[in-house]
Image (cartoon, rainbow, N blue to C red; front, side, top):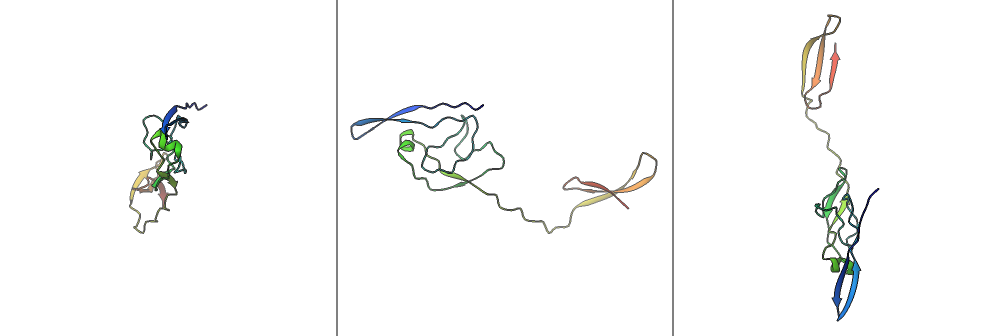
Length: 122
């Protein structure tokens, strides 16, 4: 169960005091697509940080609302998709060697140096 808290901030505008609630402080940081609200991050995280390894951030121009101005921070990064990985045209780096099976027979083994995938080849 996630816990969070809010903090009231008082801002004086036109000789009137207004109380604005800061957003809840999350236990973990995820990217937010709103560029009008204050940035919400877990303590110790920066505005472009995320605890989700699948998220990628992209900077954008913020448009702070009254809450963001009162708190003094605004979200200026949004989640984006990662570009598709390009398939390598390089020949796979492999090595071949003889190995002895438990029954005493010899086999040829091929190991991909980059991925570690190993297979018995004839």
